[in-house]
Image: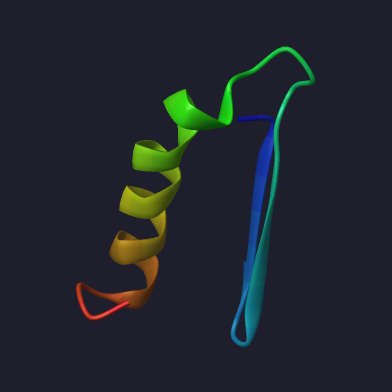
Length: 40
């Protein structure tokens, strides 16, 4: 992941062009759960 921007009403994820989304999803979801809580 190159960057993760979280604001109260939305978020955006940017990845390196060669990165595989399938390998990033778990980490992105964990980061969002940590930020928004387990109910996210």
